[in-house]
Length: 316
Image 1 (cartoon, helix red, strand yellow):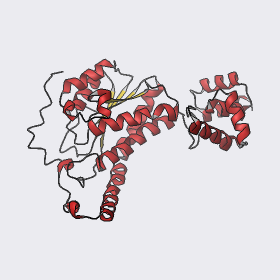
Image 2 (cartoon, helix red, strand yellow):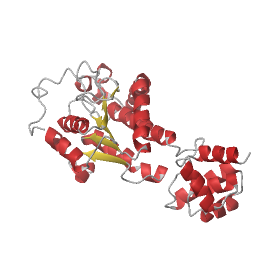
Image 3 (cartoon, helix red, strand yellow):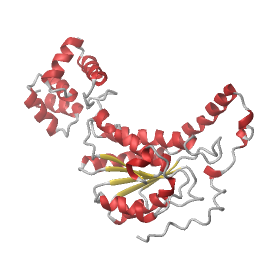
Image 4 (cartoon, one colour):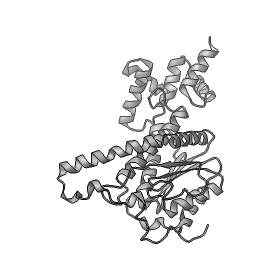
């Protein structure tokens, strides 16, 4: 991979990009009252819902690809710079407490590394080789999936990362807030997610609608793939990590709700299961010991509903 930045033209020719255009609805932004600002932002943010709805097919396919990769021991990587990178890291960091996943399973990669999370370092996004190096450093392979995120679609760091991931055989997805007619995806991505929210109220500030739509898309990708992996029962997070008082309370309420037992009984069951909500429910719903219930879950790839169905089919 060459060290030069991707040649997207001079710094003066990006005004045609949707993300850089002037929004006619906000040409008098600096003259509005606080309440008028709230109303205008609220109206414009409706575009994010439209963008997600219009990306239904590409988002659904990405969820399937991510779930397939994770089910086979692969990893999901988000790659971005600036706001896009921070959103990826945020979504990845929420997976372990919500779904009790290994921190290595879903990872966020941001140009500039950890320091870039709290300090602006946009200048670090301009080298394709840095993106490729991040992919190589993590030994990404054909088992993994890499999602490149760039609101304007042109970030060299992201293009370098996605292209390198393709060279290493990984599945790739691309998220941008400009149409493909303005910026083509890097290489042959497996899914191309275009979140077209229109020009920002503050011209060029893609942390606004573009950032909101991107976070919505990442919510769908991570949560959707975890649902397909069986880490959810009904709409309850049965793989929640019990690591603080709030999450312990949630775990107890989940067990109480699904098993239809008192809070005290749910707490006792949680303790018997070593603070593992899914195991506690498997024990209660099958009347098996902890070891036997865990064996049943293992046979069902950790899917509680399939575990119960397996138990019932074997005990008819």
